[in-house]
Amino acid sequence: ILSPENCDIEILDNGRTINDFIDNKIQELGSKDSEQPFYVANLDDMVKKHLRWLTALPRVKPFYALKCNSSPAVLRTMIALGTGFDCASKGEIQLALSLGVAPDKIIYAHTTKARSHIKYARTHGVNMMTFDSEDELVKISFCHPTARLVLRIAVDDTCSVIRLSSKFGARLGTVDKLLGRARELDLDVIGVSFHVGSGCTESSAFKQAIADARHVFDIALGFQMTLLDIGGGFPGRNDFKVTFEEVSEVINGALDEYFPSDSEVEIIAEPGRYYVESSFTLAANVIAKRVILDDTEHSEIVENSRDRTMMYYLNDGLYGFIFQCLCSMQAVKSSEQKYQSIIWGPTCDSTDKLSDDYWLPELHVGDWLLIDNSGAYTVSLCTEYCGFERTRIYPVVTAETWHQCAPIVSKRVKSTNCDCFSTECSKDLAKKDLHCMLLMKL
Image 1 (cartoon, rainbow, N blue to C red):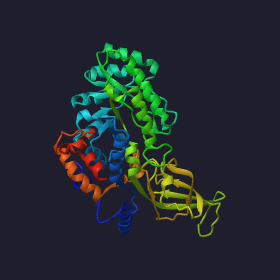
Image 2: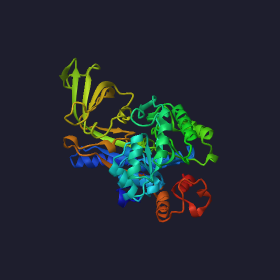
Image 3: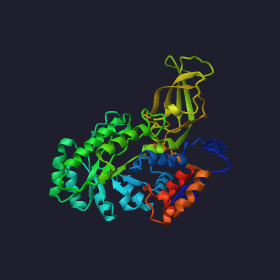
Image 4: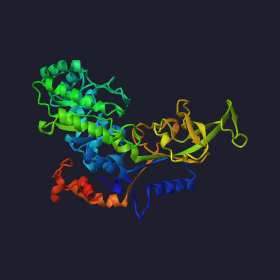
């Protein structure tokens, strides 16, 4: 599953670092007279994120949100780590199944599904799926009557960067009617899901959402409710307003209060950004530059005023990735004079603007910018607009992590005896899997 042959992974041996790899790649491109942007995917970071999850949220099984970043090395790493998968379409289900993911480790977590997609899920044994409306229930009753349904509820997402409840989720006042309709259609509702929004800045949002889910469990008479899906919204970078540990503490407390361990309710989540945001670094090149002073264009040789505005054009932009991480540019040094800078992408679209007012030291054509935290909703949203090639991804892993992981991954592929979410497997050498080995060695 996870090998240099399958994923084109670069193993960093002999003390080489990611920065060494980036420097060598830039030199290699220079020797070929190329300025193509590229990503470096740090698989070590993903492994460490998984260990962090297992420690902070031991009761919650992660189902990776494939939509966030579906690059082959990412998906194969998640498979090797033993996570489930949150899929939103027939295409994503096909991709997961093609890589060997078992159907029962997939949740079809989209509440507005095409009929053909539902039928595809049924044909291939993907039974767990979400709904939030009566029309969706009727559709499912015709296309997949034996599905195991999860009712998605709308929750307070006012403190999130990207709010979702205006589009998805049933209001609490409509839940009783929806459950009644499910009974009429003889459908099996097994649990509740919610999503507090992407980039949630207030951990208290999870507590209220879990309390709302408890209310739905209590009124779901006639159904055997065994699943709670707490969705996504987990921070993927260490400098975010709220830390992952702070969120986890609130979630654990709410679960203990509303869904104690003896309730026999399975808890899952749909993290995406959490696993991949900090794992990717983008290297982008300054391909053009303009200097503006008093609305007049000047040459940088003539003008050296602090009041000038710099305009830079990079070879990656909104059509290549969502530029949400400019503040992490490694080119910025606090001791250098900074200028108001407008950052443009490379396309002919005037909306391909990455920043209107960002302060940077003076850059020059040919300079490279290294942009951290660029792994979430970037690769999956890129296009080839204006003929610009998709940004290439170079997955890397340190030799230390690789040598620890590879034998266990190989064993895991050959055996189905170990449940990767088991807290007991570290006590039984016959059941050691990847995360157990790493927890003991890292």
